[in-house]
Amino acid sequence: MKSKDKFVKKCEMYNLYHLDENSLQSSVAPTNLNVGILTTEHLDDIADTWEQSSTEQVDSTKEYINVLINTFPNVCLCNSIEKVVAYGLGTDCGTIGYLHVNANYRGRGCTKALISMLSAKYIEAGITPSVKIQPENILSISVHEQIGYQSSGIVVYDMEF
Image (cartoon, rainbow, N blue to C red; front, side, top):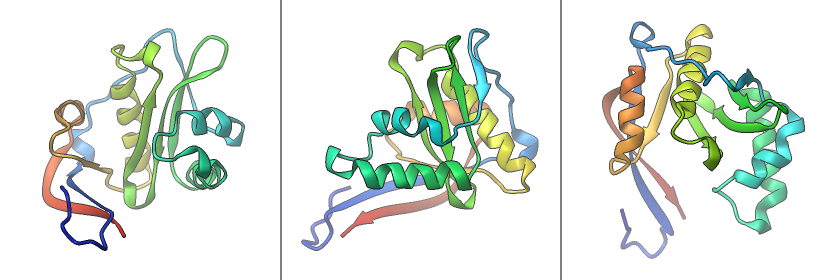
């Protein structure tokens, strides 16, 4: 969505999806990958894959990632040499905020496993997991619905001024 307001730099629309704890469809990691938890040792690797920032923002990006890692649930998938090949980071209010799967590992069920495991962590903490998805992102909607997410009927807007 483009804004005509000259004071708004960016305005994006998202549909909010939520997961009822009884609707969670568990999904496991591919057999050749190990499940782990992100730590500050992974900051550089995550920052290298972080699409939300530019090179000028690397330090603030690492600070933000560090806060996410140390504050909210997260999950990662590692290969046989313990390199992170996929990760999911939670944010406030039970929101699954960031997912990344290395291009060489896409199409193997990593995304579904990450969403399922991260959602389970929120449920275990007594928090209803949710996610914001742009309406045109049909693939993301499909994967989340396979895990049990349902549209809440709520539309949210992220605006940058």
